[in-house]
Length: 363
Image (cartoon, rainbow, N blue to C red; front, side):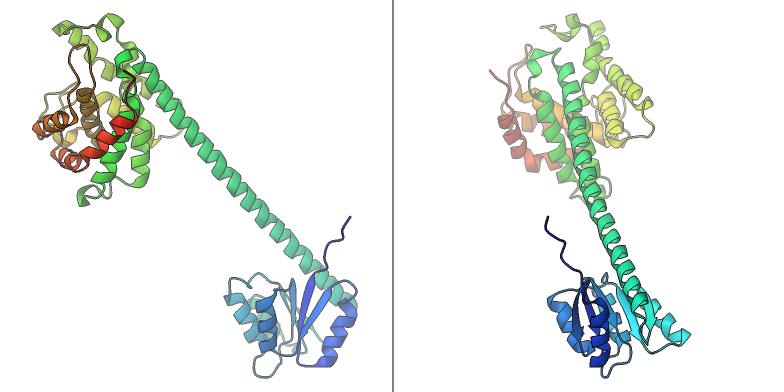
């Protein structure tokens, strides 16, 4: 088994005799380097950092305190243990040295056993500290990896739940994937407006993206004879269909109640599921909310949902062209849709078309 390399000790003293004494005490166990001045010490440290520094205080031009100060100011050297090894034995001298960041203060004349034990102990402390720092780095990486895995699992779960609802209606295909991305694109564009900068933060946009797949989760509560009816719904049937917003909200509320703390994506999922059928002029459902009383998340989904419904073929209508769908959204500005959202949509409508092409339903 290969032996561990010896720790490197740099002893800094302007007197050669003192350096030779330190070498005589430590050379058997450590690789001992020497510097006869503070300037020389800093040059050596700049090329190769020692594991520990023994530093005299009284040196010409640059004393030990100044050397220590420079070492502790530099983030690349601040963690090297410094032990003052000096003839200055006054209490205020020792206090000053320790206050500057030195780990120990030993007065001359040197006691070889004490010097050996102090050096050994501080190297062990340094090794333990570095081990803990490394373990913390490893733990941080693992936490990040686990957090990423949980976020990915959350995304998959949301899409799967949304797909379960959409599977009741075979014509909707990739609808949830498209609308999820439409909402994200719209939110990012709206975040450029001063009015929404503080509202649509990157974290909020991520939560909106995660929650969008659940917008029609309430469809699981609608009977097949209504949900899959090929013709126009009767007034009574339409009233029953509208209850999917309530079913969706209630399902998410039930999920929230099992959590110890609120989560943005569930809050938005609840808003979207319940209110994405509301209209800007108050003629929507289930509550007939109007204007900014409709949650922003639901107003975003309203544009995304209607655009996608327009460009897709349904049993009750043909697929409209992208251009026609865009014009119909524009025509609904201020009546069906939030004017600010429509204005942003018009500027990025081509990106909606690109998303629709990428996630097109199989014919």
